[in-house]
Length: 306
Image (cartoon, rainbow, N blue to C red):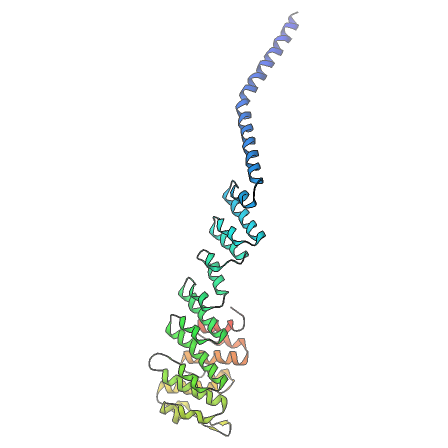
């Protein structure tokens, strides 16, 4: 009888303990149930309705951005990119959907977009003066459009850009009157125009063009064309430094040898000579000989490099 009473008491204690444990777990169960209901409701809302609405209903910002990015690319609709909060992801989305450059945040991707237009307008939208100058230079040289050079803020780079194009067009067409467009600073405009005319005369073997040269020293000591051959002159005999440099430049441009360019004492004219030879000969290795970083970059870009 005593054993039976003990067993009954044990069963009652166990049931009581079970009830107490159940009561203790009740709050957790309620919380879990509420969470399940909320998640179910959220899942129902997120999975129903239009796709853009489902993206907007995403709980986490990262989910929303990823959803809108995927939607924009799937539909090729860049307007969805504008609903992405994080700027870098938004710009990547715009790039993937080929959106207009004006849609980008300011930064490298925006600049890359405008550079890809290969237009003077695109150059004007870039974020730094250096980027703008390089862009104008590249567009001008690639299209032989000297007017594109005039967007360059640095005068020396601007003149170097436009002058090489006018000289190239003058020599290519044999029209020495184009040399009147050559300009420079420090009173060198007239000398460089004369050098351009002389370059056309040498290139076209037309000595009569030399009559239009203004600078008397250059005219008196010019390369004289007779019977299609150029008579060699000694530039070292010239007393004026500018005349000497121009004489060296003209002699160098009358040949295809890069070693003649290296004999020019002025760095700017030397680099210009090497740039012209590289394009004339189609030899990109000549670009590496150019000392100016800007001119070297322009040279290499003519060969699809840099």
